[in-house]
Length: 171
Image (cartoon, rainbow, N blue to C red):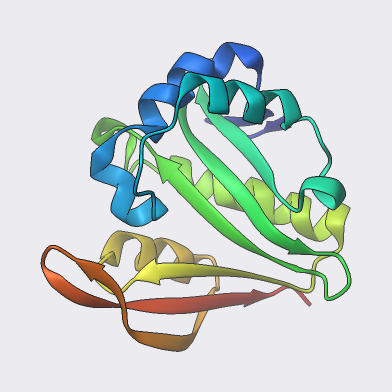
């Protein structure tokens, strides 16, 4: 477990099945997670069975963000590349009432320290919708630099939107 001042990051547990089932099937976040179909409990149970694999095997590490022992979101390292020492990062604080309180920044700080100290990463990147100013501000506050724009990358009900590529060099 990675312990912070206000939140903790912990491994996923089988008891998280119902929480993940509700979160993953929340259609309001499908645009961000690039999901286009519901997840079954069976598929999520199988995912949880394999969630114990280390990052070198699974190429990803997904952790639960908890406040006072209550799950409030998830954070993930993905596309882990142990040769080039890089990976992507994503975070989701589920309920609006828990956003803009510093929990996401604290979770990102904890996992970035872990990634640098334990995985010896050279760089971490994230992809953010050009319309997601809160995430742009969050990652910018942690020294992620805008390094690219993928024009008209994602089609949304509002039209095409750009996706921004941010990078944190860990040296």
